[in-house]
Image (cartoon, rainbow, N blue to C red):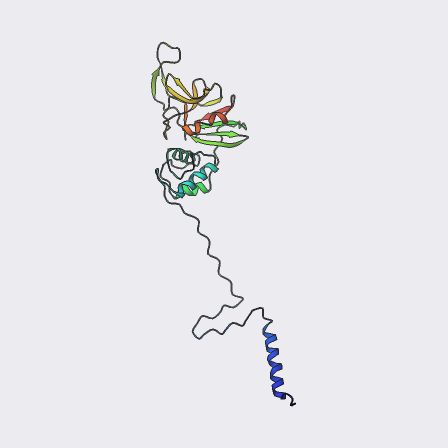
Length: 265
C-alpha cells in the first residue's frame, strides 16, 4: 500500500493548526471583512454610546369631569399622600376636586381645578404640611384658615389632610339655643389653641343650619360635614369638611384632642 505523499500530510497538519488557533479568539466565527464603502466596525477601545434615558411618563391636562387612567393615577397618588379623593374610580368629580384643592394649598400652588404640568410635577415631589403651633402633640389637628385645609396627626404623622371651608367674615344675626332675641356677630372662625369636646352622630339641627357628625372644639364652633364646601370661606364660623370625609372623621379624632387654629402668612 502506498503511503500518503509528504506534501499532503504537511497541508493537513497546517490546516488543523489553523483551525485550533481560530478557536481561541472567544467568538464562534470570525467576522467577515467590511464591504467596500460600508462603515467600519468600531475599535474595541472606542467608548460605547450612553443608553437613551427612559422618558418620564407624562399626563394629560385634567379638568373636572375627566375620566380615565390618568384620573386613577391622580386619585391613588393623593391617597398615598393622605389626602382623600373619595373612591378610586377614574372620575374627576367633586370629592377628587376638593382633595386637589387641599394638595394645592399645602404645596403653595394656585388653587384651580384644571391640572397641568406644574401640578403633576408637584405631585411627584410633594411638600409636608407646616405645623401650626410650636407645641406639636403627636395626636392633634392643625387648621390653616388662610389656605383652607386641616391636618389630623396620629402618632406624630399626618393621617388625613382635608380641604375645609371656615367662617366667611360676613355680618349676620341669629338666635342662639334657648335665646328669645337674635344676636348679631361676624361669621369668623377664631384662632387659638382648643380641645375637642361634645359630638353628635348624624345630622344635628342648629340655629344656623344642619351639621353632619359635628365635633365641637371652641364653644359652638365645630368640625362637621356639609353639602357645600366651596374653595373659599363660607360658613358661619364652623369648619366645614367634605361629606365623605365627615363619615369617618369622628373615628379618627377622639375627645380632648388638641386643636390648633391659625392664620399663617
